[in-house]
Amino acid sequence: MIGDMTYRVTIEEAVLTPAGGGGFTAAWQAVATDPQVYASIAPVQSGAALKFGQVEAETTHKIVLRYRTDVMAGMRLVDENGVAYLITAARDRDGRRAYLDVSASVRPGS
Image (tube, rainbow, N blue to C red):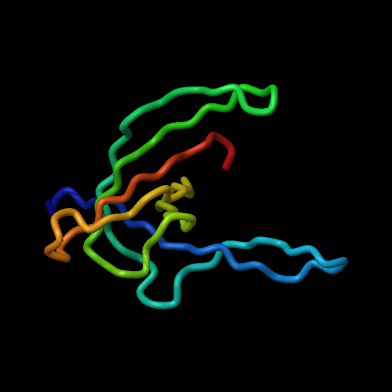
């Protein structure tokens, strides 16, 4: 399993900052503790959906990391090529705290 982890990814979280007028601006920043890790990344499914009158393509991926407690839905992983994987779920593989199975999606242009 560890030999399959050939991608170097950075774990990022969204940070909201006041934008004036009562709104907020979201920006991504690396998590504070050990943000760069190795992972295996495999596409699972590709498809397109009609959203708000536009066709939107999306590819889902299965990503495996060494277990950690600070990865959760709403965060993202960015690989060395700049591809951003939006995390939709993260769970301990077998309750042994060895590996974290992450479900993530990629949308073109994001």
